[in-house]
Image 1: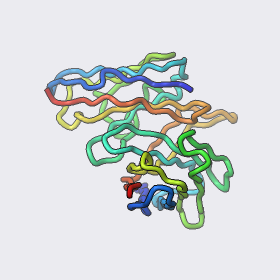
Image 2: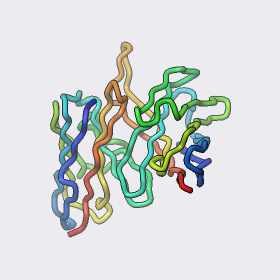
Image 3: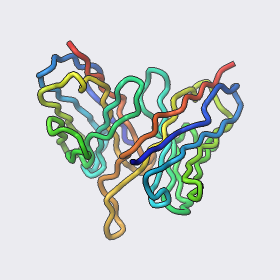
Length: 109
Length: 127
């Protein structure tokens, strides 16, 4: 089974700063199958990035994804107040079919 | 507008059963694969089950629910279901349905992602 490990667990930053969130896989993952979601308290997750670097519809360009193999990064430039949330990476595999990372909480400093 | 609405959650005794529903609108339901994902209180997301599009018998399960949970769909009713049996305390969670989408060509699919999610239904397993 592929395990996704996200770091840091919690990231404390101020609005206007840049956030860098990491997702490391225990085995190589195709970039095509690496996805990022945002979840705010009491809400369902929202699709942010798919194919490691493609922004979903309506996602601002301050969100970007990169990486390959076992190391993937979600970068959020110029943090807005609405960006403070929990972020999850996800991969499509064989067994199990999907795996989520444990999440990174982005909080206001 | 694409909408997914879960229902059927509630309080159930350990060992009991519950059937969740997810009613869809705003898209051609039978064209899409669907998933169930849950989130225990204060915890992260856990994928549970997948069902393929159409009248697909293509289903997959996480080890944690295999043999206890059954996913199914009724395309005539635009509905997805999760039959949950032998429920345990650790099954307490918010259960989400999510639409599965991918870019497919030549029999190979890429850029698989969950593009729409419902708001979830809470299942509490407790005495």
